Length: 173
Image (tube, rainbow, N blue to C red):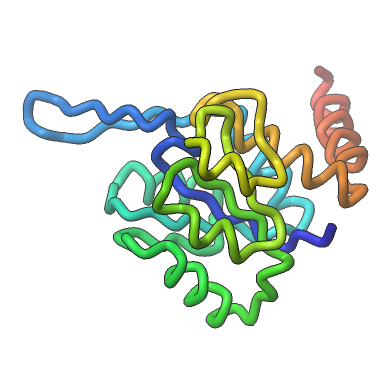
């Protein structure tokens, strides 16, 4: 396994898929800090990060900036075409891409990549082609589990753990 990019859907993967609206119509989403730490570890290990989502959301844009994603593709109903565009732009071999999706509109992209992944609560059609299925639902650490799986399989996990242990020791924790 040589995963160089992790590409993620948002609703049902980075969030639990629940949409909250305030009385003024503002949309709210919840994101897992566990997923955030996992994605930071992936980035520190040299893996690039991208989001492909059909929706356009300021919260997703904020989260992508906060976690230093390399690419954010919002408003892409056709995720397969968006993935192809991303790969062409960065000259990415599809075999080096891990993609996590949870629903029917992710099927095309999942079929193209080297490592198709799904959260535990993905639809059956997605789970049937996924090579990795998390034990938890989207928005509740599924991405963190996927990152850990990738880093362990690429022999990078121990150095990630050692780096965090060194940081804690350096700060007297």
